[in-house]
Image (tube, rainbow, N blue to C red; front, side, top):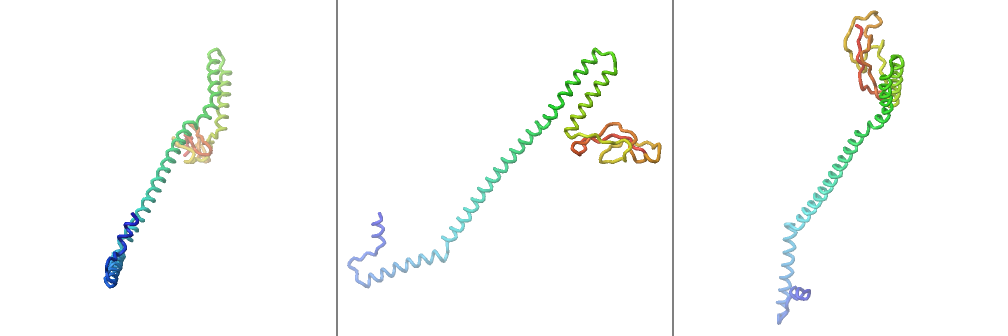
Length: 197
């Protein structure tokens, strides 16, 4: 195959004179130069290669973008799943720590069935309450001290205003209807209070 091409490209010199051979070689050179000029003048080969390069770059960038998007989507799904699992199990340690208090309440109910005296039952309930408060304080829960403190909208919710018995109690909390609590120094329930006017 290679030999056939070589034979076709070579000028055939059969019984030609030197002048005819020179002319045919000159024509071949001019045709080749003309083809080269046409390709470089219009530059179709260079434009196609630039377009192809740009298309390759676009394809590569598009592929990178799709991979990055898929990776981010996977990351988002994974973190959502972890967050849901965390929320479902976040209260587990608190619930486990409150189980002994629940057991104490069940014992107290059984004790009230047989007991006729109020004082021991009250004492048992107070012990259970103290135990519950200590467990919750270990988890970061604190009571908001409200009585006789200045009214603070960041900590208190005013239910009503009443005339203050003394001038010192104006603008202060006179009574507390419901205790307020903070969890790790963030208010989780505002104290419902009565404010002196």
